Length: 54
Image (cartoon, rainbow, N blue to C red; front, side):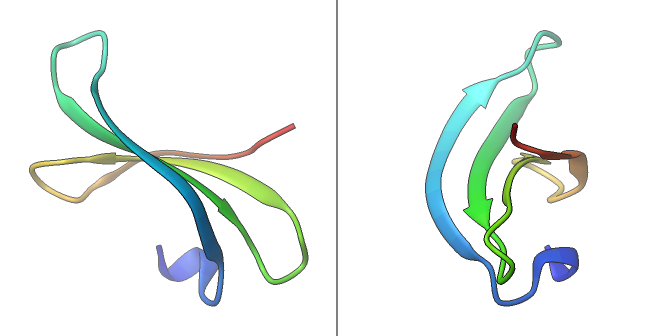
């Protein structure tokens, strides 16, 4: 999450992805006002997806 330092977390969810892996889905707004959706592996903390939310 260092890529979005200073961002505000708007929402989080814990869910299973299509492979059955537990994933945190985090919606955040960066300091420039852009909104992103970041998906993290709940077990390892690895970033699985980081995309601009349009």
